[in-house]
Image 1: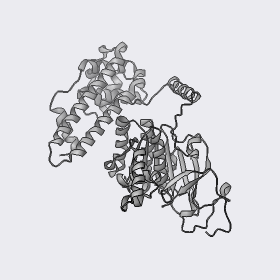
Image 2: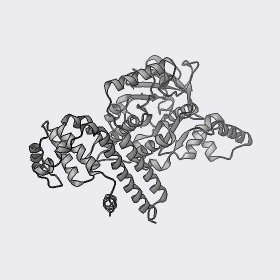
Image 3: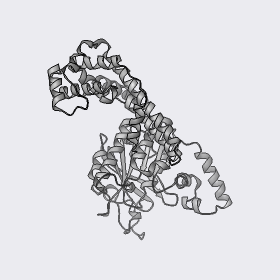
Image 4: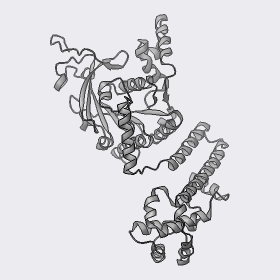
Length: 455
């Protein structure tokens, strides 16, 4: 039996919380005051009405108003006759409720309606979870994780309105201006000037970091995650390529002065063990969270982000990397577009910054925004796009930087290119790269090209 069918049976097995008088009062008021439908339509759905008859009446009211008609009895009855309405309605169905108009209590009636709808949904979810917990064929951890995500979605349905007046928008802007005056940053600090001076990791933003294979996308993402977490900001890191111990090795490699591959694969010398222990002590307690189960699918990753925002108060999520996720939809391009939009949507919904790593298709010596592999939709969804140019990693490592950094040495360096910055412009920066520890870092002195140095 399908899960939806199970839920339906569970929901029908017992009378659920509802109030017929409240439902009728809301319907009657919307019939009489059509402008109130426009005001409250984002807060109402058919499912919030318990009785099938009331669901059908609401469907007619909403349909007539969306057609820019007045929802009088005749218009509503005509709509019921000409559309697929699950419950049979006649003119009396509408006439019987018009006398219960209550404009004064509409706001509290809708709040009551939504609360009881939430109670019904919660009851069904608890019943479904209890069935799964007792089913030996179900994985216990998956049942618990799924239940947490479902409950979180219900909470978000109730809490997230998404529609604000202009005055409310200005109030938020004033708060930002006041915080800026006090030196309170809205954007997360990363330790990299290109990111920090352009305020890239602001709440609700999606930043795509893209490069050719093997250039260091994961390395700079982990460097940013560590620097941000060191300032007390919660970070979620999702990787399909590396497990939690390998990610941890990369994270502490620089502090330990030992390459991550040596940490993971080799017996450490006594002095290395001391360096390792010191690095572990320095990084202990950092608010970085790795959910390996969430990388099964992109939808699971999005659910995990929503959960960690609620339970761990994360401010940044890093997804490494886009093209490695299983395809969603009928084509690669449609799949990548869906995932990029989902990443942007979760950033906006949860008020966090999201970093999405992406591969570039090789086609020229240097990276460009039109090489984003698989979909122009990635560019459209992203607020910011940062490209990494590291000629030292390319097969033809005699290539030099273009433009302003053409006289800079490519050995042990990388060029960060802000190719798109919504509201902040574009720019470039030269940073250092230590391949031994997969660490990017700010350069104090930029190395000049020595023409006598062989490439």
